[in-house]
Image (cartoon, rainbow, N blue to C red; front, top):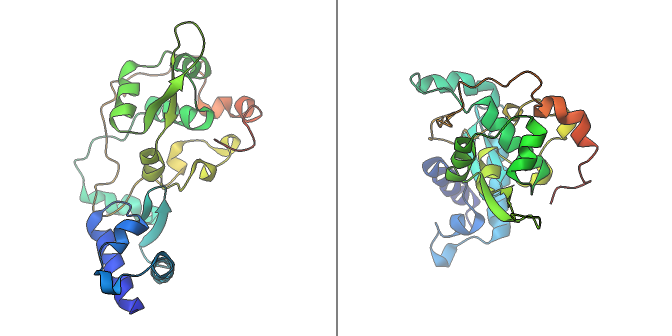
Length: 224
């Protein structure tokens, strides 16, 4: 097995794809006669990741596989390639998905109880359309409201391998602390109109920052 050749093919594929690629997808890039197994692919990925040390890109493992992305410390400069891009996701949308990520599964009413404000329907629609959240069941109470949870796409976007990789809630100030998707060549900070970007939180609204000390004590030791 030519490990240098394997590394080159794997690197080229991830740069071309601009998304996470699983080991199975990477293996399919090779002919059957010289196809590397998972152990050989992982060895090539380790070597590739080490070769990026001190450079402007990095190799990141996410829930769906592996991707090459822009490092956080140069992301602002690289983002100038898209000077006309609209603003990022609104604070309200990020707060909503953060609550779902840490407290899932939960209902829309429970989200509103934590935030202290009504959840704009456009926010939930945007999160569903973006495939960051999905209905995972129903609460066995009158009306059987939908229970919401995050998806693999949510983990991929924020560069997480699993929910266990989320930082402790008491330490989280904003989802921007995580590494949002900066995989090449997709534009950085893709924005979506969630219909709430101009809405200010009313006085007394509870945000994840303000609720962290209260909610952290109620979280289970591990996230399901």
